[in-house]
Amino acid sequence: MSEHTAWGLPDPDRQPEFYANVPTKRLLAFVADTLIVGAICLLLIPFTAFIALFFLPLLWLVVNLAYRIVTLANSSATPGMRLVGIEFRTTTGARFDLGRAAAHSVLFAIWFAMFFPQVISIILMLTSARGQGLSDHILGTAAINRAAEH
Image (tube, rainbow, N blue to C red; front, top):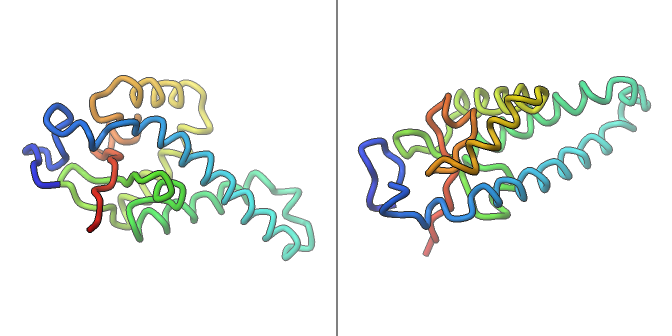
């Protein structure tokens, strides 16, 4: 990322390649991450003597939050995001720290639980120049295509 705006992220007009197909990639990453979280939950259920089945939504929420927070804090991308070649960056162009990862993950969970904020987030991803969702607009973050590492 050689040419940045004063905002710290690549300019979508001068460097559109950083934002090309990001909404589609975010959807694919969501599907991959959902499958991974589901697999983790299935692996944990027997270790609770199957009692976790009574609390499956809570187990899902806890596993999903832990999964997202840990992976975003460590590499600014979930495994699903790494699979499709995108990562989150802050307004300064920096990778996520633990606080930003936690805030983004909690907002993601809240929007996911509520219909209208989720719809607003999807509309924003499809119409904003940087493909930012509602959480991204609030936190000043954006998902970008990872630069090729040579």
